[in-house]
Amino acid sequence: MSAFADFDRPLSVKERAIISGLTSPAVIQVFLDSIPYSTDDFYRCPLRVLRDGTAHCFDGAMFAAMALRRIGYPPLILDMLSNGRDDEHLLALFKDAGCWGAVAKSNFVGLRFREPVYRTIRELVMSYFEQYYNFEREKTLRGYTGPLNLKRFDRLNWMTADETMELIAKRTDEIRRVMLIDAEMQKRLSPVDERSYQAGLIGADPDGIYKSKG
Image (cartoon, rainbow, N blue to C red):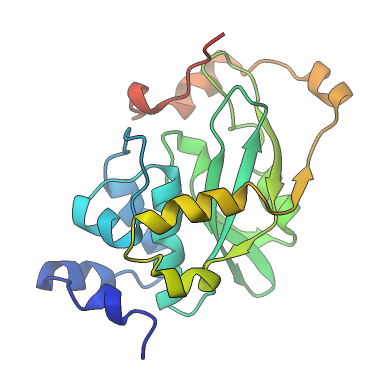
């Protein structure tokens, strides 16, 4: 039986047309960019993202992993880690000709698609460093997890079951972590300049942006 049987069975004609049109990583990114950024504090499985027409970064990465799988890529995600004063950010990974790229849903302009031109995952993640910042203009990216293949969650119907999203989120907290900068580097970081700060927030929903509680 196809891994997508349960996903495809309930789709409407319109939904089938959307899914069949997602023929490349770049087109998958266009779809994610076309739907509103969700400010909800719960996770949506890929089927519900399609149905509701909204997603935040976790939901978007899950949807992208599903869509990438349909066109022949393994369903890989990676969690980018903050300094504790910002949200984490999830990517769906893909690899072409030996190089890594990413699809992502984000409230920030610079935290979305990456072309597959990065020879290592570290290179790919570091490409997000300057654009990864919070309301206080702090550059907040600190590390990332190893890739997680969602195929291991097939038996839990991750593409169609919202409840499996919590299990996947928990798993990203448990897997290997790679740190990018040390304490001395952190002390030397400069704040984000005003023009870059404003550019990154074009089209952002303020309700979906992390705000420090302290």
